[in-house]
Image (cartoon, rainbow, N blue to C red; front, side, top):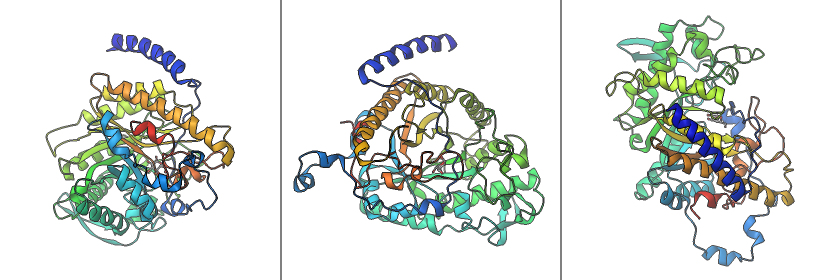
Length: 471
Ligand code: GLA
């Protein structure tokens, strides 16, 4: 394998020179965008439609509105499928985004799957009661009755109901759902790790946390994908663990990633209370064991992370994936992991497209499928957010997405690579998380508006849309 990869490195350099010639791309590198964001639903829901005049790319053409109306709509998922058979193309949408009829139309027209931006995360499922446990009731797990926090499924169910009705009425045009995410250091209330579910009490021990972890995974997966769930056939996969590898060390994320982040905060952005309780990857292995125990066999199970092309972190992710795979057993026994989710929060130049190709091949070599799960793009460092600059920025973005698609297609042509999904983190630019400065790493660093996605503020496809629409 090592020898083969040396030849491959030579090939990659050649393809890089070829691509640089053909596509006029920049090959300089910048640090990747950290996406360790823990934007609670409130802040995400504060997004407001852009009510400013937005020059739409199509307005520069001489196509009249009437002609535009009559123009055949190029359907992204149909074009994408021609070059990517068996690969899903999706987007993320929050409760508010899916309540916008124009976004709902984009989701159901152009994508075959959707990831709920916040509504299946622990903080939402605990009713955003982040400072105090929302109430305690009895729960049953592993033959034991334990005290468990009250859960609230209504926001996710509201979104699922909308898509359920669409799927029922459009059986040939269904939109499937990716569950996101069971175990994460962020957007998980701190009280969940303490005795009595009160963060002023000591942390619980590993045995207690294992019962809570199993109960949580059992409850969520059974509620949504269990035999009695109306929505059970809508889910194709679930992110079991998110962002458990450290950007600092390249090993597992600990409770000391950011010394300035107090562990007693209501929720965390960098430090992991999972690690605080376990001090090892035991919670990760157990999360995949419990998910395998309670998930239908048809539901795929994933690990998901960002800065996935950074070599130091990539080695840590490979270690994690290998450790989970090593515990795989018969159906329902041991762990099960189907794919690595590369989040794909990229900059205009970094990571280099060859690093993306390399990462897809590296994770595939562990023996899992690979997906890009949260793709978007921060703006050029010199983009000033003005209308005049937008057309150039759209063209830079088109070229950059073209290179990234080139990397995906190149990796897919390698033996042993099974690339099964490409999901964008949003639909229309104005709702992107990158429009707001999150209070953690990642998010909008410039304070200027970004244009990260495939559709503009007028809900119209941008030039980069056509890269993936196979045009
Ligand atoms: C991370 C999480 C996502 C989302 C993004 C930013 O990548 O996995 O759920 O919070 O940050 O919006």
